[in-house]
Image (cartoon, rainbow, N blue to C red; front, side):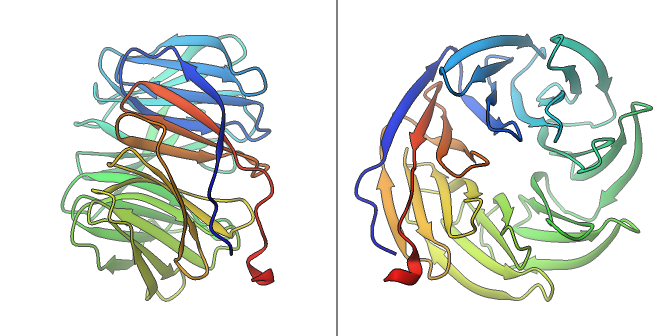
Length: 307
């Protein structure tokens, strides 16, 4: 795949007064949600780049946000150790999940929309029944805080990454830890499965992305960013390109098949802490400690098979 020399910024979303910690697209790509250290969560119209709603979510920093697959519900996690559930249509809070004893670092809705998974600095991953607004079970085993989560796209498998430098693969049928993936020399900050489920990517403060076989747990390859630490990771919907947000203020793109760098883009003035790819693959959203969100126009990228 050819190197990408330019990547246009279509819009800058400004409104947060603190670091942007998390961004997520709705399943139809029309909405973007963002969480910030300013304790608020904002909803944005992607087409117009306008803010449509602000949720006064928590008493402390918002660390993570997640949208349900049907786009109706929003979950927000905070340093205040709680998870808030919101009805996006009405803008009303519909529930509060409590039980974690440290900050919430990651949230994921299960595909059925009735279950939510949370990861916390208290070293646990918890499963929540959203119908009853109560904890169902805990996944325990990490020796330090759990930073990130990812669902396998076809199988009932959850991946969790931790400050303990490992990735765990959990069989959700029995809440059993099936594999422990070790290789990072610093905490694991981000995880993403490829769309076909064959590979799991992990990225960390050691500036390394590992590509793991999701069935065997063996590392197939790795590539180094030299970016002062990788903070965020997202894979394009077609599975060809990995995007990383980095502590050196850059967005970087990588050829997933070879690990070759495709481009390095600096438009933020502080660390890029969160990255999300739109469902149609045409837009990348990056959120930064500079308080802004950028919408990058990716467009049609060259086919790697043609080079």
